[in-house]
Image (tube, rainbow, N blue to C red):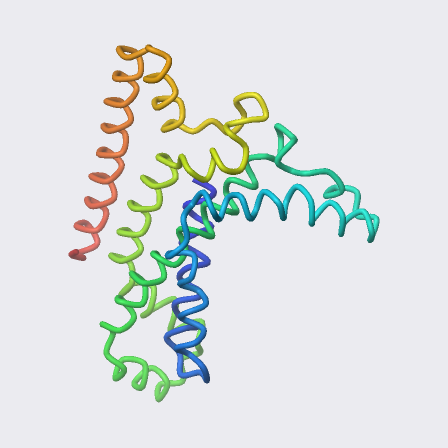
Length: 214
């Protein structure tokens, strides 16, 4: 849930920035979309080196004790690495969906709000976010399902460890199948499917109550 909220908040903020009339907008979009073309395992191995080697060395040089040892080796902090890397991989896809929503909002709406003296924050609160709400729900559904199903990032970063601290549902099911625990893991897979389905139905019902559509 932390990764889901973090991804959508950051993606929405970046989408609004990338949709603004700024210099080198196309270049910035290319940079932010780069994680989409990289394998999750490749990204995980890169961040494993950064979080396990580079960050502790730099933290030791500046005497920042909390990061002098790898967060991936600590049961209490390893999940932060999973959240960081899985969010970094998921943010570009969420940005694309938010950009599609922003493009669909008529510019005349903002021009009228500016004439009426509405501040940027008030425009976001009263116009941008309500009009983007259906796209926000889509991203929430996709990211929630994706993070429940995270596998390659967890394998590449921690292998599910330390212990079982970062073992995801997908890893549990997959490893169980290979260990011959077919019946139990099949039940887990069915429960996982229905949890995701119920969550999606709930979110879609929220859209309908608000009068939105997908």
